Every structure is written in structure tokens, then in C-alpha cells.
Length: 112
Image (cartoon, rainbow, N blue to C red; front, side):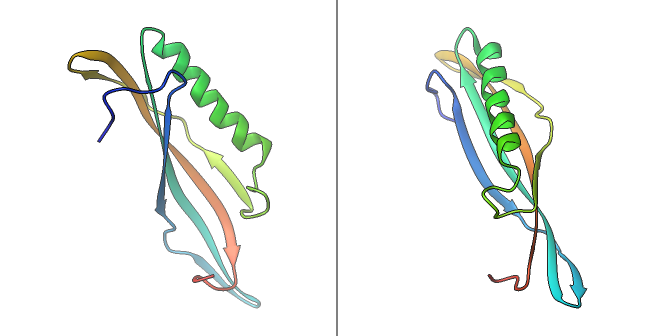
């Protein structure tokens, strides 16, 4: 469910996603994941196209600045968003998109 009003700079919602089935190597035992998460980006207002571009560019810049999330992942990459305009009754319409993010990492224990 999307809000009726969004802050000027936009709104980001991180969804945990699914780790999927890992590939397994046995010597040493390692589980290799390609975890798919999602970032929902939402902007509102008369300049929503420019605001959306700024918001998505800031996400890209943050990912490029630290592709390992401080050493938590081996590699992080985002996929292109598919924006849509959403009407809101009695308010300015929203521009929103889901940005898929793939986190590549390995672990010795899938519960760690």
C-alpha cells in the first residue's frame, strides 16, 4: 500500500526479498547466494520526473560507492527500474518503481 503524501525528496522502502536456493561447494563447505531484494522508490509533486531521476541516481551512487556493503556481500548490483505513474484521489499523482537489487554473498552456514 502506497502513502497518499510523500516527502519532497521521495520515499524509499526496502523489502528483504528472498535468498533463493544457494549453490553449494563442499571443500570447504560454502553456500553461495544471489539474494534478490527490492527497493520501492516513490516521489510525488509537479516535478516528480526530475525528483524520481534524482532519487534513483542517489541509490545507484550509494551502491557504486560500496559494492560490498562494508564487507557483508561479495557484490551488490541493481537492475533498472520500471517506473509507473499512479493517480491519488485528491492529491498529486505518484511516480513509483520497484528497483530489484541482487546481493551476491557466500557463507559457511545458511543460518549465520
